Amino acid sequence: MKNTPIWILCMLVCLSGCSSNSFLGSRYDNFSAYYNTYYNAERALSEGIRNFEEGVEQSPVNRDVFLSLFARSDQATTQRKPFEDAITKSIDILQNHPNSKWVDDAIMLIGKAWFFTLNFVGAEEKFNDILELDSPLRDEANFWLARTLIASQSYEEAFTHLQAILSAEEISRRWEPRYRLALAELHIQNENWEEAAT
Image (cartoon, rainbow, N blue to C red):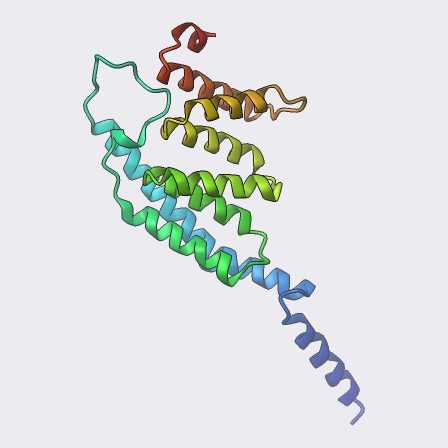
């Protein structure tokens, strides 16, 4: 009988921890989202990219055209299944773990998978979603958005986007070289050889 209040208190603490908004609940939700879905989605995307890169290596080189700085999606025959698996698992995170810290990572993963399956409209939408969230993945989303705009031949929009990033007061030292490569790729696609060389 002396332990009854302690047991009741323990039960209340445990039950309150089950809510996804509580400290314990949010920790469990993050753990579950990562190990049940995000990890597998990330592996599926990595497999798809590996298949894509192998396809690029095996495709013949056209010596009449300047090589792209980035492997282009039309250079390889990609197997769609790994990318579709990555998208499905990432959508599962968005639906079943909307408060998880892996939400922006899942959105980024969907955008990349759509990029590699040539769904440039969907990829652009997802990268813009990340930019609207003001996520820590903002710099990566800016880079992938630029690549998407270039791949979809939206050259003016890509140029405006990259110029805005590169002229910002604060620019990520880690991502600046990648932005500049994307800008060079844009100039190559537009056959602005002098601009591409600078």
